[in-house]
Length: 140
Image 1 (tube, rainbow, N blue to C red):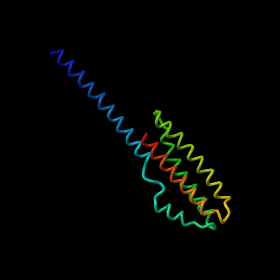
Image 2 (cartoon, helix red, strand yellow):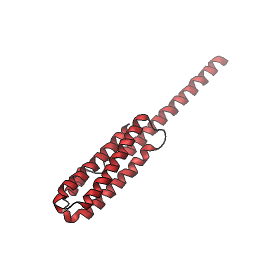
Image 3 (tube, rainbow, N blue to C red):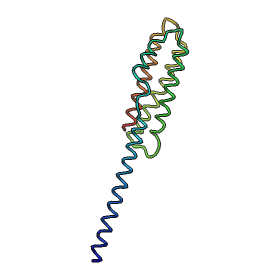
Image 4 (tube, rainbow, N blue to C red):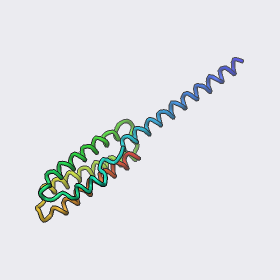
């Protein structure tokens, strides 16, 4: 009878360890889902930004910077804890795209009226790329 009792304790211990591991995996999945979150820049937001004129460029740049800051906050959670090599690579891509967005914003701020449409397009393209890169990093 003693061996059956010891065996059931081993099975119980194994089940506890397995359930703890499954719970940890579930928590990580939830954290990733929260980090990915809903799209911060929705298509309707992009549509509004596409309508900004040269005269509205200061508001455009401030709005894009605010959206980028929200993306930065969401992306910061992706580097917490142990990071896989795939996630590390995705985070490096994310950083490069974020830097490109900053450069594009600076150029847009200096763009002349006849270059505004191109500058605005380039900024929105970089912003969209940043959000997509964050989504990829969240899945890595």
